Picture (tube, rainbow, N blue to C red):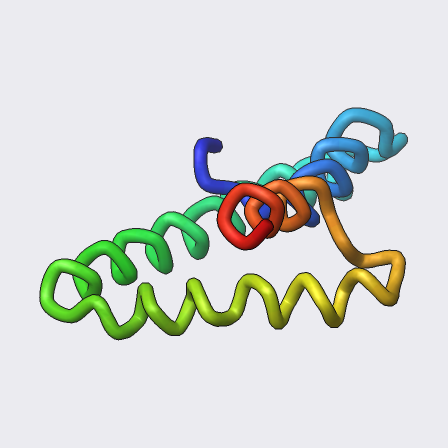
Length: 90
């Protein structure tokens, strides 16, 4: 699973590893697989769009500091977003 959501992956892997019943284990495995497909599709779509028009990339770049500022006031700021903000905007 190369393109998993960093927020969802740990929960799904925890469930897959530690749930006591095989049905929940299989559901968590399938959910992780499905999430990986969704993220991979989104990334491939973004790459195609960026090849034709860099507008979406500009909007994403603009969204990073906005997202950082909103999440910095909550417990929801993850290391990846903090790293991007520091790397590109500090």
